[in-house]
Length: 320
Image (cartoon, rainbow, N blue to C red; front, side, top):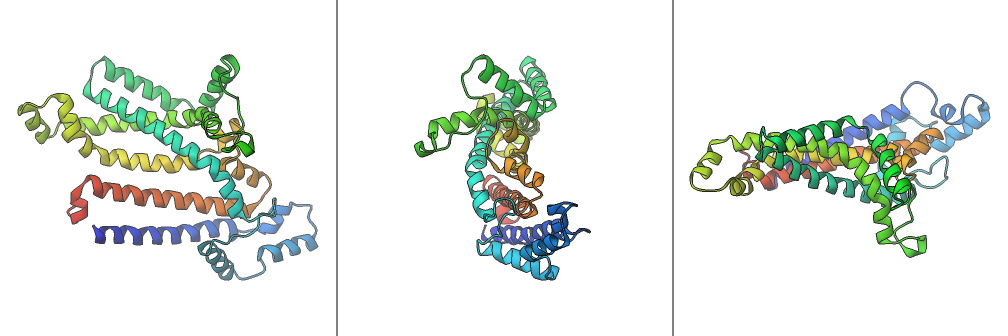
């Protein structure tokens, strides 16, 4: 197990290094002047030169890359052009909204997908299976932003159970509280979870059906186990590897894919921060947020690899 973790950890570090190079290259080394892009075509040469010096664009690319990565490793980031605030502070403020939103959406996704996927597999080619597959196909076809608008029209406009948007905060000092914050994130989480749950339910169904056809499951049934007992004791554990793969990718996508939903619900999260940074041509914020999202994807994949080893002991022994 220790060697397995070391290999995966080395892969994580190498992937983060490659990702940092790619992010830096795309935003810093593409043809054109980043200072001119930020200031626009009407900027004077003096203002462009001043911004270049402020951003460190007058230094060699390798030196700029080393300064950026070194700052990230030390927890130090450059100031945003738009806000004149370290990007780490801006990102930390927005993660307070985006991370709970992604966790809520992922919890809803897992609960719906596992229950519906197992239910459909246990009733293969029957009415329940057909109904779940039809509903999942519809869920995949509906865009998140359109479903978000429908949720607002139903629960906020017609029923008036919740607010149509905004975030009250997590504390009473901010005008909100824990319950108020969770209620404000419920509709956005549902909007994000719909498509992901539909995809994962189909994956779960396929994985469970594949394992149910294995000889050892037939043997377990022949020994007297009921269908439900065979599912719980033998099928689910062995069917989890493909499910974990997709679920890990989905969690990363939930964090990276909140831009539209956060805009619809007017939530002050990472998505709106990126949207505003692009609109303001604040490439420093864009660079650091993109690196954060890349890091989230890599770390989530590492966690999924560790979960593989927990689910499948052969990986810990190096047999698979």
